[in-house]
Image (cartoon, rainbow, N blue to C red; front, side):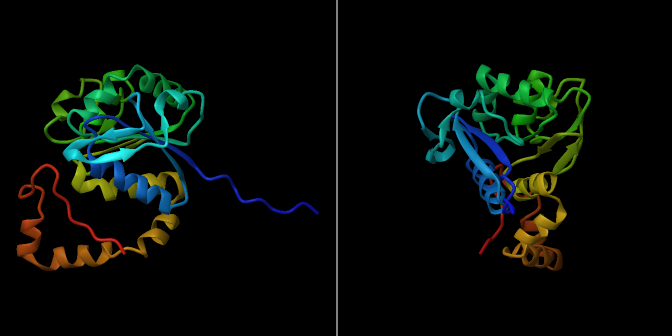
Length: 223
């Protein structure tokens, strides 16, 4: 009698480049791996060690050029300045994304990457999408800009920026695995406690409102 085998983990590709936003890369990597996904961090440059924003350095798993022949369940683009534009100018990444989208694959981007990468390649045409408020005006007329932290429209998932990276990452988990998996991994976090504190304290709520925060500010705790 053949032994039952565990299903293969979902495969995720997350490219990074000079100028990538650290929070928008690290949180999706963390949350997706907690959910059980195999996340490949790929350098869109010519070296595995990539210096992203604020002097942060990430050692990628592979070069993006070596990922072109592989298939993925999800491709996630972090934003950043000039990281989003650098990803948008990467012909290798564009080719990988186009092939992935043609096959009906799930794809996502956050911050400046929805307008400067996905939309620039026409991969958000006919979709509702969001992005960082500083960059939503870059969406072409074919894209319907939505004022929301995270937008899921078909196989495209978009998010606004660093402070919503957790919500964005959990939305990706839900798309890959369902709501039950989201509930499983959030039980190990104190996200629910912070939501309670913020909602019950007007001064804290005002402090952590989007209007009061700079571009890269966010507030979350994990255990």
